[in-house]
Image 1 (cartoon, rainbow, N blue to C red):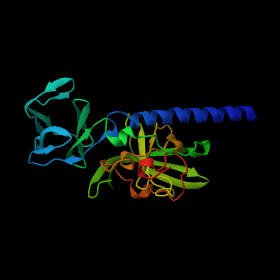
Image 2: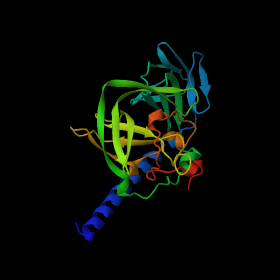
Image 3: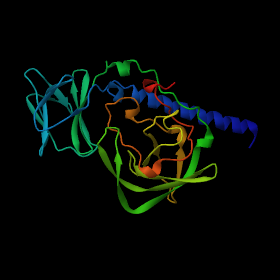
Length: 274
């Protein structure tokens, strides 16, 4: 391969990363994204009113219920709702978005608890957002690994950004790879699309140049022989890196890498990063 070919490949690599990073920033700055959250409200049996959401909210064995005051309205799946509305029992890590004027009221279950998390586009955290610092992309941080599925998914309990909260994931397998000749491995969780994987990790940069609690890396479905690419240039912050109103999972203990991954997103400016 000529120097010209190598330069062209590097330029294409950087361009692809820049396009990916732009999409990440656009999702984060969405009018109803995590930067728009104004409250994290934990529901109980007694109805509660919240300053950033309509109605009185409660939960029980039959799931979440809201009783709207006269003149209040939510739009759920395109349908107007007034008076009492029963959301039913929500699945773990599932939820419903109800529209209230220009806001979205997220109703969800996290760590076995029902929550209400309003999202208002005009919240200062969102309107002041100027982007996330990141390391300059480099091909050395895109490594090939090997995925090995467990005989059966392993229930894996991890902590959360909220003290006392726990998340349980069914880990389908493990990814082994090398960095600078050093063998490493990460327990993988199911990704957002069929067959894809998600790894949560910390490394020697955590708390120094990258967010202390966690970062996430999405992986495409492994090839038939288990080959999978870990491009740490695309390691992202979870919502808890920006706001205390998030319930993000922490990495399992075995995913604390003893090396410095100087790639991907850094500490957000909202947390003092630069």
